[in-house]
Amino acid sequence: MQICWSIRGSQFIGGAGQRALPIRTLTVGKKRLPGVQLLVDEYIAKLKSYCHVDDVQIRSNPKNARNVMAQVHDEDIAVINLITSNDWVVMLDERGLDLSSEQLAELLGDAGNTAASRLSFCIGGPYGHGQRVRKRANVSIKLSSMVLNHQIALVVLMEQIYRSWTILKGQKYHH
Image 1 (cartoon, helix red, strand yellow):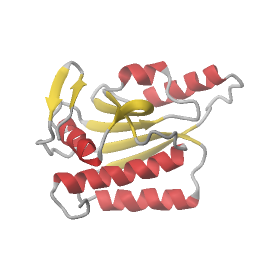
Image 2 (tube, helix red, strand yellow; image 1 turned 90 degrees about the horizontal axis):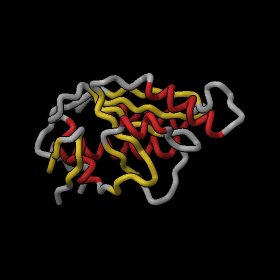
Image 3 (tube, helix red, strand yellow; image 1 turned 180 degrees about the horizontal axis):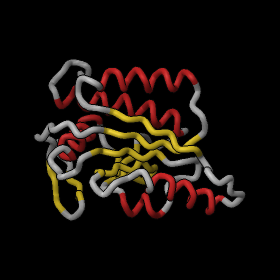
Image 4 (cartoon, helix red, strand yellow; image 1 turned 60 degrees about the vertical axis):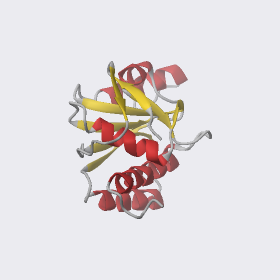
């Protein structure tokens, strides 16, 4: 099954390309539980044979705003300041595209065919993403029809990125 999405005005269909872009996860939230960090580190270690992965944590509500809109704004600025013009940005959002594991693998493969130098996955804070990140994102996806805590979303994302690479490489992890 092939999917089609728009990457900055260009259409990409399928996942034939496998250039391994470095991956960075940008996660807004509170300090991680030790078990969550252990799982994230395990997937980063597994992914080393496919691509380089950086895991960046951004403190939720960095200016301790009392207003939700101000909090989202401050988090939005903190995330957007870490994204470069050469990043290919995937925003995780409950209203994003609902992809299968195979389709996420195609997305990773197709991103490798762009002029991007890095693939950045953005996981928002408790109130979601701000307008800057929404406008900057090349694509928006959802991991589930249910809303996930940012820590759980990160673990699911890391597993799916690993699964995607095993799909692209034709390995047996994904049956």
